[in-house]
Length: 359
Image (cartoon, rainbow, N blue to C red):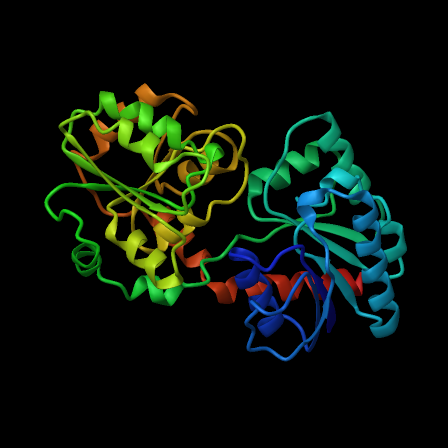
């Protein structure tokens, strides 16, 4: 199987995702990526660099990017072209993709976006028998099928650091990070982006009645450290921040040190959550909003508890309830955890590639 992988970025999870597929899912691999000095991959592959600044949202640059993919595909004649980030290019409504019609094209979407224009974009991007969408939640697959888009496969987003997380000791991580060991630690892990509901959690603090520690760990983004500290007024709640770009080991330490992973995502977000999956591998109880894919994953797999999206008071009530008790993990929880192993992810991708090419 010869696969031409195309990505718009190699930062963060993009690099882990792409390198995993390069190393495990094709006999011959090509990577069409924006830069290479930061890209680390052990697999055998050839790369072609495309200099494009996606922040400019330039249609001209986008069309040159498509032309670059088509030019490379003519030279190497891949079995499949796999575009790993359909979300970033949705604003172009599939323009230029017909240049790739000589090859099967798979587009991976990591989130689901509402609205008539987004619906039109999905339809135009996936128009044609030689195109397929990959999504990472059953809810997104269901929503795309409501748009009469049937060429969709669901592959659960894995935890690439499964073994490293599983091998960490929570008490050791707490002590390493100088976190309290005698009260529950509620972790909100990752960048403080608005859509992740950081403000929803902050607004809930005044209603929390149990002694807890809220631990913010990750890159400072929309919500700044100064804003977080303004909410440090409840004597029952201890707020600890570690706002910086976390290395892989730092991220794992912060995650494993928590007793609960809190995901108060707003309606701006509908997709798979990395901290949710990572938290499950670390055997954490998940507290999340009930909206979209996130709510369904938590509820259907009995990963923890959900509250009404954007409802800070209900979030506080849930925190007061769940931090008073602990229990054994349900069978559904353990089954979901098993699905998150990277090997399952790679095997499913290989099956999809073979099925799509042989149709």
